[in-house]
Amino acid sequence: MTLPTKDEQTELEAAAFRRLVSHLRNRADVQNIDLMNLAGFCRNCLSNWYLDAAQEKGLNLTRDESREIVYGMPYDEWKALNQREATSAQQQAFEKNRPQE
Image (cartoon, rainbow, N blue to C red; front, side, top):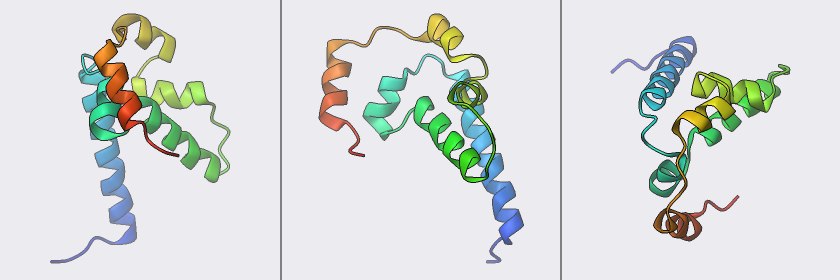
């Protein structure tokens, strides 16, 4: 097995990120709370990680801009189109599994 070079690894990681973002955009039926309860992260987490990486590079990106990159539209628009009220079961599961920072 030949390991990728550092540049190739970066390209592969970027391609995987783009595919994940595309997948999440196409699965608006999957709520963020469902992602949090199952995987411990959601679209907002992903946009926060993107923002952290941008800031580490000295880029002047805002939270709203990083969310728009992940959601493919302004966050408030996505919420209005796709976000449903969490059920009590979803909320209870979230409290039980809440990530510890």
